[in-house]
Image (cartoon, rainbow, N blue to C red; front, side):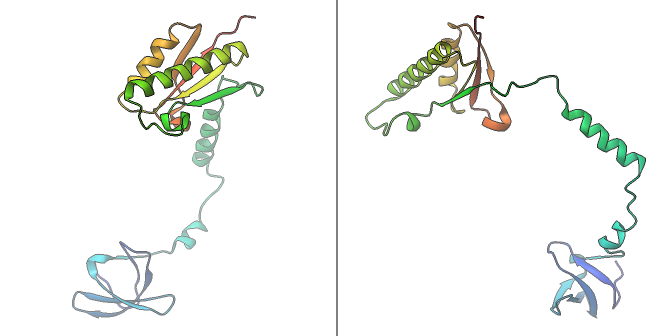
Amino acid sequence: MCLEIGNKVAVIDADIRGVVVKLIGDEVYVLDDEGMEYCFTKKELVKVEVDQNDLSKYFDINNPMLKAKITSKEKKKSTSFIKDKKEVVMEVDLHAEKLVKSTRGMDNYDILTLQINTAKHKLEYCISKRISKLVLIHGVGDGVLKTELQFLLNNYPVKYYDASYQKYGQGATEVYIYQNQ
């Protein structure tokens, strides 16, 4: 790259812009807008031809290609699934530290039994109170609790699937409870 005194430059790895004031061999001295002078090698700099603010003056907001992109994004947002606003969703965190004050003296079997019993109790509560959705937060781990929950849920009139990855990550199961009308 051929740099000359007076060229506008930007630093590649830093947020520094300025004007070239001195050239000594491979070293380039840059004066920024605040009056600070920096020394860089030619490899660290990029010549700036046009300022970004000058480019934005020529941006055409009525460009048909831009309008097509905006309308296609709006169409993607509409879905056929309409969520009832009166729907109650119960969330239950089955992590052991959320269920008891201390797991001291408990082995893995005791913790797993506590988690399964809690899930069973909450599921039966949802059935009795006609709550249609239950989210069981079990965490990722080795998958032992998730497998046991699936075994438990197969004994009830429910449909279950992984909960929203965006909201819960991979460690949650959403349970839809069939309600008799």
